[in-house]
Image (cartoon, rainbow, N blue to C red; front, top):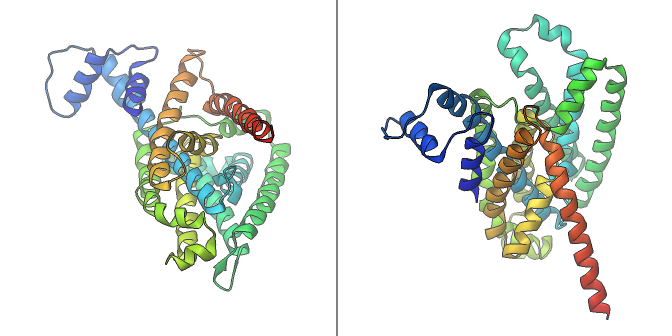
Length: 337
C-alpha cells in the first residue's frame, strides 16, 4: 500500500507522469539508463517538487502514527495521542507568537533564518511545553502517568489561551498565516525540509519499535511490568523524548496535522491485534500511507488550488471514529441482550 500510494502521489498532478516515465526519471537520477522517454519538465516536477513532498509526507505520517501508538501504550488509553503532553499546543503558541511579533526580526535576519524561523519556533515551542509537562509529572525521579495527563491538559489550556491572545493582536494577513499553518500542509516541502526532519523523526522511527516488549508489559500495569524486569522510568523518559522530537519536527515542517496519531493505531489494532510488536511498525507504515494519500487528495481535489491537509485527515478520521463509536455501542447492546 505504501509503495503504491507513493507512486500514485508522485505521478498525479497538473503534470502527468506515467509509471514508465517515473521509473526512467528515478533510474536516471541513480545513474542508470532506461529506454523510456520523458521531457525536462516532468523530470523537474518529480525531482524538485513531488519527490521531496512525498518523502516529507512519509516521514511525518510515520512519526505521528508511531508516536500516537506509543503514547496510547504508555497511557494505556486508546484515546491518547501526542497532543496530550502539550507538543502541538506548545508549537501552536510559539508559531502564533512568532507570526504576530517576529515580523521585524525576520526583516533583519538573513535568508536562512527567515526561512527557518517558523519551523524553529514550532520545534522550540513543542519541546518546551513537553519539558514543562514532564517536570510537573516527575517527583523523586518517578514519573506519574496520571499526573502527566493532567499536567498536559493544563499546559494545553494555557497554551491555547496564549495563542488566542496573540490572535487578537494579529492583522488580517497574520490571521491568514496562522489559520493556514494550523490546518497543516506539505506545500512547503523542499529537500532542505526533508533533510532537517530526517534526524529527529528517523531516530524515533528506528528506536520506538524497540520498546514493543516494554509497552506490552505496561498493559499489565506498572507493578507487573517492573516484576518482569522492565525499567519503567527509563521507558517513560525515552518515550517522552522521542515523541517530542518526532512530533515537534513534524509540526515544525508541516504545521498541525490532526487525527493521524489517533486513528492509525486504532486501525492497526483492528487488523493485527494489540501486540505492539506488530502495532508499532505497522502504524509507521500505515501512517505514512494515509498521510501521502491524503496529501495527494489535498493537492488535486480542487486543483489548481490546494486544500489544507488537516481538513482531509479530519474528514477521514472523524467518520471513522463515529463508526467505531457506533460499533462499540452495538457490541455493548448485543452483550447486554
